[in-house]
Image (cartoon, rainbow, N blue to C red; front, top):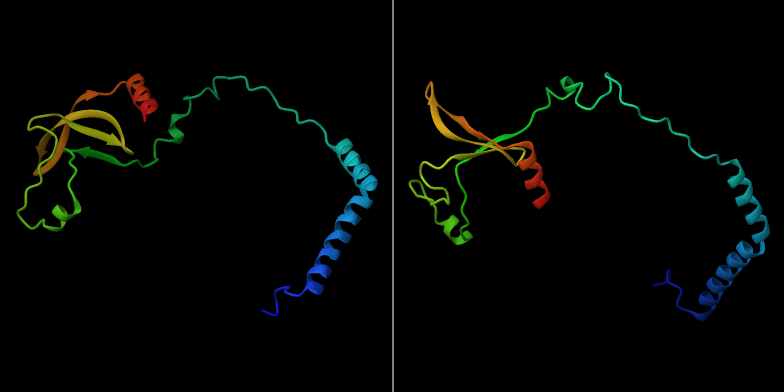
Length: 147
């Protein structure tokens, strides 16, 4: 507790220090205004060059720059909401009912955004998806604006 200013003398000393600091800042006010004015005189407005699209810098003209960026592709079979107590009761052989109907198209998502729908196929003993419907760019934008 010795570090905290408890006594009136310590509080008075702190108040005096603050008052001196404020007076010093206020007393040199004329000088501070002159310094601000001289700095303002040294500041020049920024100049920007106009962007004029040319065949080399048109948006979308160099798509090769992004072709190697990895994205996460997900095929969603369905969803459901269940309480944690039911999750804790799951065991091998348990069945979880999903909201999708059998035979219904699966959603294909890229980084969480729906881009297509398709049907499950088996190719060389591996699951795959045959795309049956691609979401148009305008539909994707409409869905993004709702989110």
